[in-house]
Image (tube, rainbow, N blue to C red; front, side):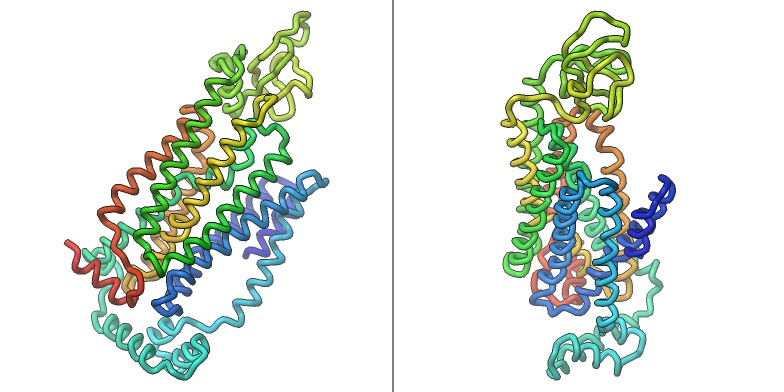
Length: 440
């Protein structure tokens, strides 16, 4: 599905074809984001389970960084966007071939009564014949769950599973409400808003920001089975609150120093350049005319328009700015860049991987796949919500208000998880479920 969707997008001749290809890739991402952490959690030894599930997140962020660099390299190439989308079929094909070599999860095989295959798969995964104790433990756990013979809907509504599912869904929703995908999807736009006017420069800086997301995920991998899930998650949220607050403060300072502008037509409500370009329908003209026939040239206009040109009045291409304010100094832009870098560093080391790690291990076997699919759906629903509303939020609250809003969500999550998040480091999967059964 990844390869097919990639090829469809690269060959698209209409917007509908492009959207259809993206839909197929989106479905593939949905399947992968649910099944891969689940598979890793089921086949991993307890002492390194957290690291291995987190490694999946690290490789996802590594792919985002690599694609960001590739986008920057192809930014000035004719039809470069087709190459950007089509080249994704290469790793997708390699991934497909790799999956053909993977053994099935021993837990799944035992649950289906395929005991001989399960023991063979466990032996292959562990690379040793010394699997008797672990295999017997898995069998006992699955047989115990099978003896209970509980309907999945009744199981989901049981207090212990409901507590685990509430926590899992909250973690996934909070991951998106921290604003991560506004930075990943609109990173170049945010950097241009901060004052870097050249689109190619903004793309390169956005790729560098995504590098921090990649490299600091390995901090989480290193610490998850040493310091535990709880400490990493809470520490990450503290850093997210501080960095988002600093990011908002940087934009607020830029707003105070922004060039005053004269709003025209549908942009008449904007009085500064930063306000003007934050709107999706307005641009800033450093020197232009209120109408095409006007004889008088006016400076610092905020005019309705597109990235290409103004839709009202007259402004030369060299004076027209749609996504950034003209500036002789990039100091404010570098401050925003550093705040973005720190935000992603804090996010990647905890909230980037912990929701997936924790969700993969807190549910009983008989509802694990179903519960994880619900939590994954919550993640993507909030991803869609935050991504679609970001530009509207920026229009309403200004860029600084948008980042302070995400900081407030992170602060609320910090308080809630301080009370509700248990430590699951080093525990067998069935021992983790006992924690939720004992909670009141």
